[in-house]
Image (cartoon, rainbow, N blue to C red; front, side):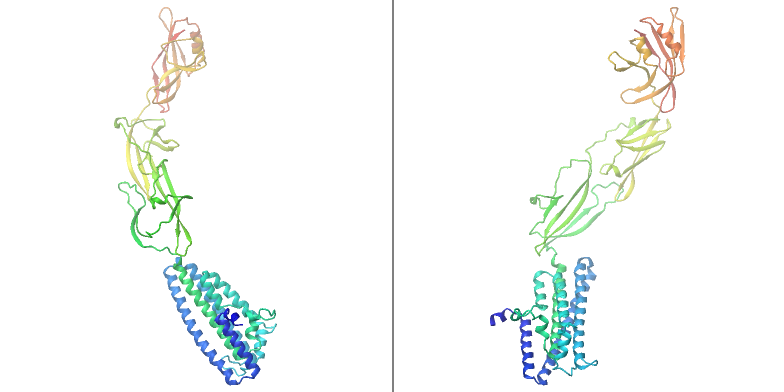
Length: 521
């Protein structure tokens, strides 16, 4: 028997002892003086409960102050503390209601819990706490268990054991073999009113003690996951390391706390970075443009758990480039698309904008394209760059706008191999190949520009045996019938000239081109 008792909690031992005393009182018809002793115990417990309530209220007020100072850090724990306080008040008041029901059952509707007349009566306790109708004992057990489950879920395992000890509703070990014996029957069956009120007051104290343990544990939890540090350092974190003259250099100056005794695991993406580098990251920049570096730190906290702290930053990679320009050649041609390269070192292309006078400027897939409109009027390109949310002009450059050079007239001749070539005169060409070309064309194809012109008219000058010029005109780019007839009559080795070639280019300027000498083969 003593071995079994040694396994009971102090609280359960006390309850068992009280139960034995109660049974003895009933059996011996204990005097009113002994029952009055329970009143003294109940008063003492009431005073103790008031003290515990004051302590818990002070803890909760401290918790409230912490939450007001740092709501983000204390938020989840403060929410649990508030819920625990609310549930404690509900359960405490429920036990008060059971006391009042027992006393009124004993003394009538005017019964006073603090001044009980029928203290020795057994029937009121049995009726309120043990009868199937009211079932106060079973309901109290269910509420205690539900309250205990919530508090236990809010705190770590070690603190949960203390709370479970205060709120245990297990059946005493010496009554486990009796299937009809329950927690409520061990406390309230055939118990006098005075003793039942004392037991309920004791249970209220257990509830308050459990609340206090929960509040203390939750307050510790606010700092339980904090990483311990032993070294403070100052860091300057710039928004950008590339700053243009006239723009702002912006940076955060922060204090960083570290633990020099250990280093967190660093993951770049999902790959563990070399721990030997101790936080220094180095990589060869192989791609141009904005690059992103992201990952997380795997930090070991004092409670043995790990926390992932994500990080992400960007940096800009530019091509190694040197600009060499001939200021005498700042020339654009009117009427055509002039490819322009625009860049600002250290600034992403997407953050660069530009505009132009005397024409239009647009961004293409391979750079910028300028189309000037008026000849002999400068086109000025203004370049702006956006950095840290601010746009500023960084450069202006003026280009001289010139008319396109005169093109060269030619025939598109197809050779015996089926390939086409541009025949510009001065060499023998077969009449058939010449006539098959359909007519004359004009273009600038000097290797720098490749611009087609539209031929509006041309003349064929053929000289007879007397040296007389027999001109034939075409008012399009194609041979006229008279020109074709005249060319067909020519003998091999004979020459004729293509003259008065009138062509117009993309700039809208009409011009007369140089003649071509054609030798008939």
